[in-house]
Length: 354
Image 1 (tube, rainbow, N blue to C red):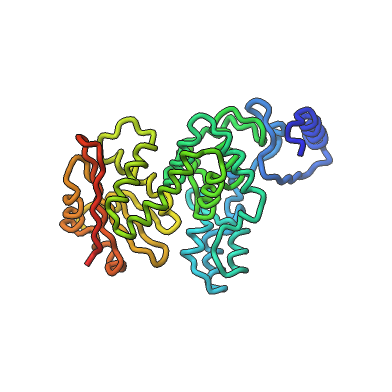
Image 2 (spheres, helix red, strand yellow):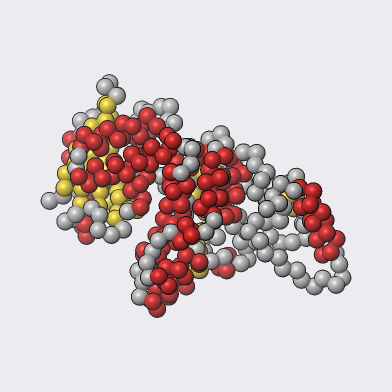
């Protein structure tokens, strides 16, 4: 309510400092809040505290949410699918060995006996849209990368620990980490979308934002996935063509660039699949593998640069890529996609494994 009242905030922090710092009557002070203590410059306004946050939870990592073992035991107790719970609510990497779940959502899923986005019933959905609409330089591309399953570099050190002082996209990304919309990897200083619940929140916010191009890309991604299921090869090629035009890749000249475009194009597929790039299987590495959560067909996608599209399907079969997906042998699509450098066109061929 008083987010812009800087003077009152400073007076309050001065009051707390004078009340708590170096006072003989204080044995221990414990304060809680969504964000770490407000910074002035590079230092905390109350530097006598040990801060526990989503950026550094040591030594209380296992108390930041439900641990994997706790959720596993709860799923056994209440007869719920652990893998589904993991896809929806896991992913907050507190340390090398500890990953935690969104405890509130796990509790609601157990109570309702269904998995869905429980953040939609809170005001955080509208809050996320506000920060997305800020669209600092490069933020839009980063959000699309995050939705495609990529990690994004982030400098968290300059964030002032408030919800109004934003000077760069890094400040916005850091706030989203503290709010739980992004996970954080402290070993390489990157952020990522941790789970399906958060991913759907991002998509909902973007669809209601002023990012018309990104909204169109998300809608196209849904159409692309449905066209792939129908084995509509011309439609698949057309939607990939549009995704290529929407990416910010300047040098579209090899299979890596094509793979990146495909990962972005199939953003919507993450609602139904785990996407694995360069998956070891058979006698090689499949470019992209989509493993379904439930009853959708599994997919092996092989990419070719300046080669006939049929060679991609031939490679899938010759190198026995389906061998690692034998449980899906009755519902497995082989998808070949090629880009012709001369015509600047994509082609597609889809077969159902028989």
